[in-house]
Image (tube, rainbow, N blue to C red; front, side, top):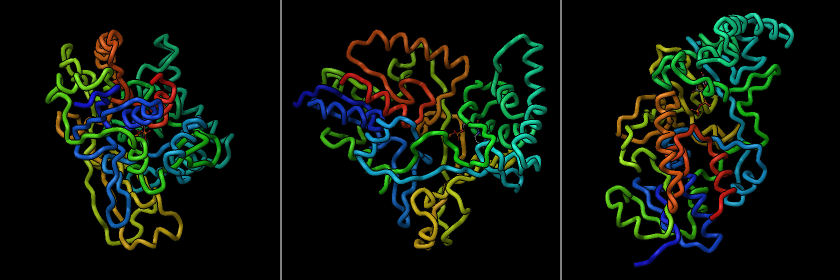
Length: 375
Ligand code: UDP
């Protein structure tokens, strides 16, 4: 039987990027994945000529030129600028929070007027923090109000966040909302990064390019025959759930998952944008993705007569489907630390990615981490 330098458990972005680098370094890699296909949550399927992001929309963005050049050396990326729109009770607001949003919310037209409104709106949270004698927001609600004020919190953040995480904003960590920029200019670009795009031809091209040179076995569950797989290589790269790796000995970490309701619609342009967030609590889904807008722009939208949308329903992960988001609250953070302490003692196992590091990772930092690793 062939022996490998690395057994890589999981063919998502971390595993595939690692396989690529190891192959470049002359190492032999075996990549196994329990799903029938590779790509983890980047996996796309073509429906009506459109690449449908089967496990949720992915937009690659980074300011790291080395990372951008690296992914573009595997497959060329387009320039896609993410500008989600929020729908609250039928009224539309631009995201991220910028002069357009402030105009829509308060009819202010200059940065000075907007700033005065924001200062007034933020005061509540700042006073509460002062009273409590803390200098940093204690939870997501306090963070949101300190960042952007109560009006925007109530209309654009509270309902969406509580649907997405299934927990009260007062019970969620502040850092989740720090991802969102606040801008005093009319600029609906969701990301601050210098580079942003989608692989031309879809994410499967990126993953297939990264996995070239590795042996790959899909529909293969590491845990079904762990000793066998572990004996196949000198070192292991594990990208699955770290709590499962340790047989849940300290308890199970919590995750959110997303259910997608996909629909082909007989119209070329359903919502005029790739991403529309539904920010009120009463609408059961968090957002609607119209996939064609990631790769077909302007008049080209009308070249395909149909469109494909996915409504996203966020629920607690109970072992079905795939875990998507780690829930980084105090309980899980403390639990993860226990597992991390075990992981640090491992000499032949590398843990990486959203599930193994229990981290709300974007794609670019994953690639960056692997590019900086010794292989
Ligand atoms: N968020 C929000 N309203 C929105 C969009 C995002 O309150 O319309 C908050 C929400 O708490 C979410 C976080 O911002 O969890 C990060 O959102 P992002 O769109 O970056 O999440 P992802 O695309 O990773 O699911």
